[in-house]
Length: 354
Image (cartoon, rainbow, N blue to C red; front, side):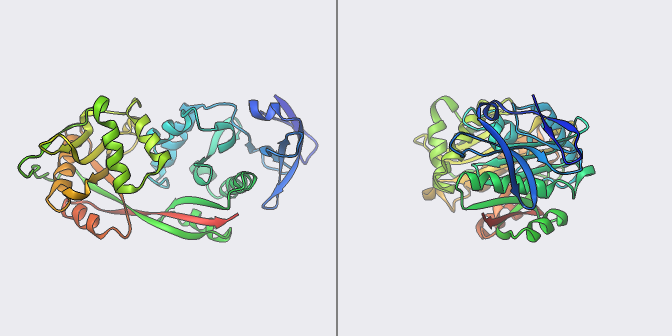
């Protein structure tokens, strides 16, 4: 631990990550009208914000020496209960990101504390996509600090744009983004389907079988189906591979439809984020991603595998099935609406040139 003098002449502790300790000098770096303590290597590169300087607030921004996952999940659940977190930020996904050995926690996360409490947490996915968690009591105080940190980080990495997420009904965060020069880049529909209403039985064409994925032998085929449906996104493919080893993974919810030759023809990977079950109501489970092989579309496989997923979630006492779909995917909209899904809100991806 080292100490940094604040603007009033007192000293506050700033905890340095192992990366920051290895750097040779500490100086001041101004972003967005604020000053941050930064560490630089002996060539003036690798700047890393490690704490605030010259601000009167007792809030402390620091580089992460490691992951305190329980504290982060507690903050997530508090924010989810308040209703201002987009469903892309959920406990399973955060755990997969923060425990990924390839993810640089010290560089791409930002905890913000006050009096020993974690009030804010920022995470940069893929080094350029920002997700923010802000405690309800700190809303309006931390968002711009997180943006300053994220902009400084992506700029130091030589990345040209920063992408930031929020819900369509989160007027506060949207206003902050607009004020800071972000523009709306893309929208996705967040849809939900109550499970107390009747669920039809799945109906399969002749020659097709509904079952659970054989992870040991079929995971590569599943990833190929995903790449065909959504594009070869390497980071996403790695995440879905790792998901099969996550504590929340339930193979009985990993549903596929195979043709008579055993080839995967459709899939609906359902999941339940266990951390949310004790706190969030209604009890939610996901029915995504949904994929149908290109040469098998239009014969009812998508409907059949989603219906099976709804039934599997209800059998586990889940009350609301959720999913995400692109705003312009009219075919998917018709399918999901015919099965009882309705729009909950829109996920808004904003972008700013750095």
